[in-house]
Amino acid sequence: MADTLTEPPVFIPQTVIPPDKPLPMVRGLLQMIANPLYVWPKAMYENPYHGVRWIGRTFHYFRQPDHMKAVFLDHADIFEKSPFQRRLVRPAAGDGLLSAVGEHWKFQRRAASPAFRIDALRAMVPAFSTSAQETAERMKSAGADTPINVMGEMQHATLDVIVETILGGADPGFAYDAVAHSVTEYIETMGKPDMFDMFGAPNWIPRPWARRGRVAAAGLKKAAVDAIGRRRLSVSQKKDLLGLLLAARDPETGKGLSDIELRDNVVTFIGAGHETTALALTYSLYLIANTPEVQDRLLKEVRDVCGDRQIDADMVDAMPFHEQVIKESMRLYPPVAIIDRMANADIDLGPVKVKKGDLAFALIYIMHRHKLLWENPERFDPDRFSEERSEGRTRFQYMPFGAGPRICIGMKFAYMEAVAILATLVRALKFRPNPLHRVEPNIRITLRPEGGMPLYVEKR
Image (cartoon, rainbow, N blue to C red; front, side):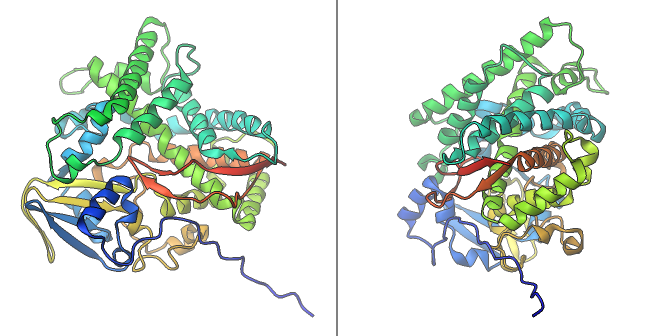
């Protein structure tokens, strides 16, 4: 009898199960603070739009590409950073690239852009590979019968990369563990709405319960200031991001970045730069641990392209399936799952009437799983990002890095870093699922899995 070709088994990754219908008001408010994913009902994954009137203004919940294009590109001047979003990030990142607006933002974006040109990024790939190799060696030592929290390992790896590529390499004064702890403390305590936010209270009202987050923010700022101070005292002329920021001048005024602007952007790149890529890798390892056939394809690709050699930029370009896995991971679990804006003027978006002061919520997580946009949206299917199947897909249907003028400046950096690290790990290690752990993503500033991501890992 001839062999019969069969499709690989379908894997539906774990996530939060949405409610069948909207929650009662009080319960919904409390759940929004605990985890918004438990608030948004199933209908939001099937319908194109709805708005909610609350305390004098409308909350617009967008999850369709045409609305995303309007908010982030066509009318980006009308939909500005909201006070709520700025409250989440400003205590740590100040007025760096994440929260600055207007000409202040444009100047900082111009100053940082040279560090993210493709030639500069390609030169960083060896640093990505080295960090991944060191991570693989740490993970080998745990033993195949002991689950490893791969989230912590990915955070360690990507923070190593940030120190090497952003701050110019080994820095004995940089306290890795303390910085990583501060990032986690800040996200867990400050990175969520509170009851004051639900009722529109201004940001200047004190939040006594946020003390841990303020301490963490102070720790991140001190780490940045100290790193800048050490660089100024050194004779180094490295062309890393910090060096470029120190040398940056506005072409029109000749003005450089102030000490506060330098600090805020270093904090931004330390925090956001390693957190988002670490999460993309964390969820990718969970997904491939549960799909051996996908893990085998990755292993074959890295062995065919790289052999036993350290991964370089040309090899990253030659491993499209690795990038497909990363992209599908960020579709299912976008590191930034929601982005909010506030309208500074009235505007009509087709049938949707937006008034000045209204809030627009771009629900990236829901859009990435929306039944009108994706075939079998709950299924893990890296081939949906193959060149053939990507044709015709709008750029505003998939937004793990935002969109428009303020699209993440580090997007290409993150893709190249994630591919190099994933390929290095898969070549050295085999990842197996942990049936005792339930994957429950929770929206803070980023989409973190509750309880980390314990997986079984064995060396090849």
